[in-house]
Image 1 (tube, rainbow, N blue to C red):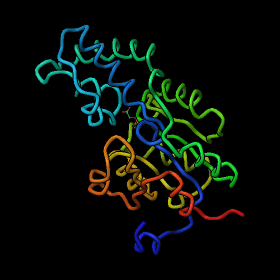
Image 2 (image 1 turned 90 degrees about the vertical axis):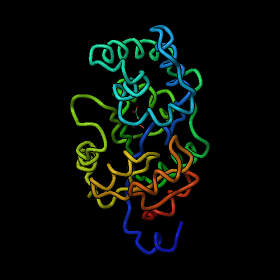
Image 3 (image 1 turned 180 degrees about the vertical axis):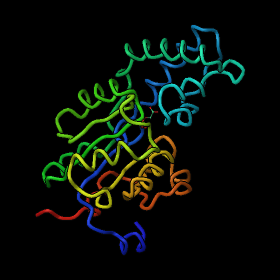
Image 4 (image 1 turned 30 degrees about the vertical axis):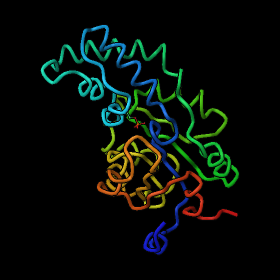
Length: 229
Ligand SMILES: O=C(O)COP(=O)(O)O
C-alpha cells in the first residue's frame, strides 16, 4: 500500500465483496459451461483466459461476448443464455475454489464483528448457491446477485441498498473487487474502491478505472478497517 493510501484512510467499518474473481475462482466452470454450449450450437469455443474479459457484466453480456459478432441477434443470445445456464447448473462447482487467504480473512472479519456483504452481477440464484457452498460458514449481512430488483453494477443502487440495510454510511465501506465494473460501482456509491490483483482482470485495469487501494493478498484488507476492539 502506498503512503498516499495510508494518509487518506478514513473510518472503514464494513466491506462489500464482489464474488467472481474476488472471493471465488469460478473461471474454469464458467468457461467450460459456455464452451460446451458453443460446441453444441456449432460456434467456435474460446480459451479459458478469454473468459476473464467476457465475465463481469452479467450472464447475458457473457453470452453476447462469447458468440461470434455476426451471430448476436436477441433471439440467439436469449436461446444461448438459457442453454448455457442449464449446462452451468450441472457444472457450477466442478473446479471452482476459494482464493488463497479468503478463509483467513473471513475468519478475522467475523472475529472483529465487521459487517460484510456480497454484491455480484452473477444471476442471483447462482450467487446464493456459491455463497452457501463455499462461504457458508461465515455470516453475510446480504448476498445479492443480479435480478430484476436492482440494476447491475456499475449502477450503485444495490451497493447503496446494502449500506442502508447495514446502517453504516457508504463512505465508511470498502468495496472490494477485481474489475473495472467493481471500481466504478464503488466510486459511484461513494465507497472506497479496493482492487484485488489476484482476480480475473489484473492490476492495470483496476488502476485505470478508479481503484484507490490495490491489494495483492486478502489479509491486506484488515489494516484498512477501524479496530473495533
Ligand atoms: O457474472 C458476472 O458477470 C460477474 O460476477 P461478479 O460481479 O461476481 O464478478
